[in-house]
Image 1 (cartoon, rainbow, N blue to C red):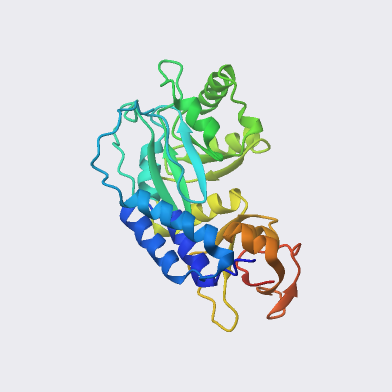
Image 2 (image 1 turned 30 degrees about the horizontal axis):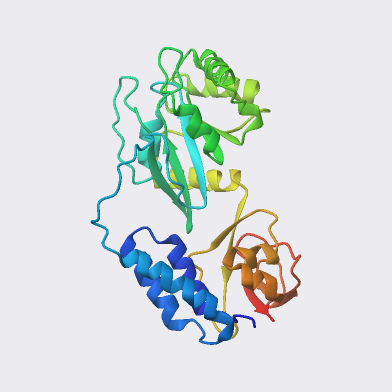
Length: 318
């Protein structure tokens, strides 16, 4: 018997998956238990929910065996995780402080960042986790740096337009990572040319683009001087570089609320969206109605219909 889960239940389930604290998870589970349809098709699911709720309500003060925490393991958060890397004093810490609410130590001497510092970049409802890591350097490099780089979905490579030895620094960074089996040309990399307000930065940027523009996407910035408009532009660059789309859902007969979008890879289909919401919905999907730029309102779409950024989708299941 199908579960026939309601949109309200699926929304509560999404809140549970995104919950950060024990209290938030308990509240979401209680909401799911309250609104889940009560019939034979949901017996197994209701039992699983009761089990999860019971486990979360147990006394968290009970002693647990101590475990050694890896200081370079960063729990994923948001739609994508990006490693923020660069040479010493390139301005990484200033950049993450400008783009997110992270509060790293910022100083004029190298190696102020000794462990990963995560922050959340938010662009029009899309959450992207940026992890500032210790610098890549021939003199000293923390052992876990390459671990963070390998685990990330993409890399933000900060280079210093105030440095006359900019090209040498890029070659050094590339060589160090190649020794550690990280080939930057095989990774998704956005190069951020920082300190574009420095003396001689325009000429250095021109050379940088001539030498590396065919290998990497390059965007210039100033982490110290940039105002809100430039921060917004850079945030959009990061979003577009990741090739993501935002899709909003609505229930039949209801208005769409353009908040908390589902974030999908560019080229995703209606079926991909249904699977992101719930596997049961994906299995029972019949068709969808789609609203979006250049589309007839309420366009009938099959499971293989490719979605665009900003589309509103109404899913219909058996």
